[in-house]
Image 1 (cartoon, rainbow, N blue to C red):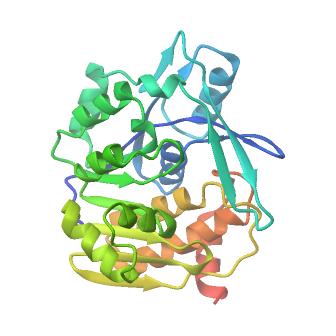
Image 2 (cartoon, rainbow, N blue to C red; image 1 turned 45 degrees about the horizontal axis):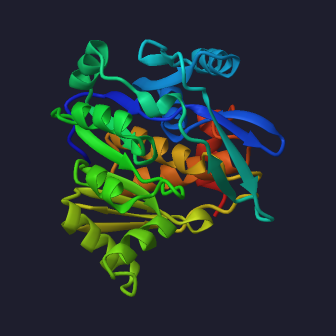
Length: 300
């Protein structure tokens, strides 16, 4: 169980077009998480910025059709809407080329954004959107609130500077990252030769984190909450692409916890949600929640 003052969620960060080999797909980890949370019935706001261009207009249309409000989506008159080149390997695992600078690098602090941050019970923010000082300062200012704070670690070279990542970790109560990112952070402090659980415990102690969730691709995930480990082996599915699977996992985890489910159950639901999205194209495909439960109950 987690303590949260209300079930309002504010997602901060990048919105963009993932340029897949098969064509452009709306993306950005915070937006993906927000859309999945919306599907799960949570009250969620998305704060970001798009350019004054056709790509931005199409992204706004997509967000609106997905049920997200646009009140906190800013418009930049000089920087373009973000596009990311996505490369898939033979196992359909994704790597990314991220342009800089783009509109979401210039998220400005507004009165409305301040108000939504003050009202939120949970704020979800990523390390990638903090690569530029303008957005980073805005996010840091918004984090000076009494909400629960969850950082989504996204180490995308060359935007994976230790100082920035650690600044955001030090502001968080919870952290979500993958097993490769866990190794990278441990290498910064010469802890990489330790076993996974020891590194996770060290991470929690170093950055004063109540909860850490580490995804392991098709090998499931592990959570560490109040000094107790929860492990799940994952679900076997045939992946189409893994774009957004981690975002779906995070949304499944948060929504399950908000329903009051135990940590172990939330981890299982999160693994199934990520697995389901991996069977479909893009980060926010159409699906029914019943499909997640089918994976949990049928696929072992």
